[in-house]
Length: 151
Image: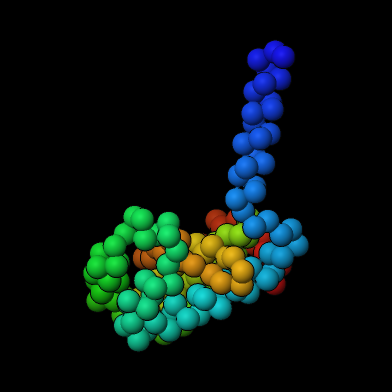
């Protein structure tokens, strides 16, 4: 067998292993989006109530590998001092790919506007937070990719 054929087989096997590790369910993006959207609502409630440990408890293993609960809480407390509680939040985009849902919100905090970017892992009807970021200012929605989740 030549080297090129072996590389193609290796690539296909790698892809099969990668996809096997995912709970792929084509056509269920809407279900994943609804699960992540509901989790984001709870996350926002915890934010406004200052329940940062509860927010961290929603995180998945990937986030926990990179950030301790103590560091997460300290960062959340600092962000709360800067932005304040949430007054209103609107989802601008949702992108679904292989059990992951990326959500972008335009959020009005008591002390100003910012965009929130969340990445959720959805498995077995449960969403776990993998990433959360606040970016000051308003979002130019025209710069965001189209939503890929059915709503």
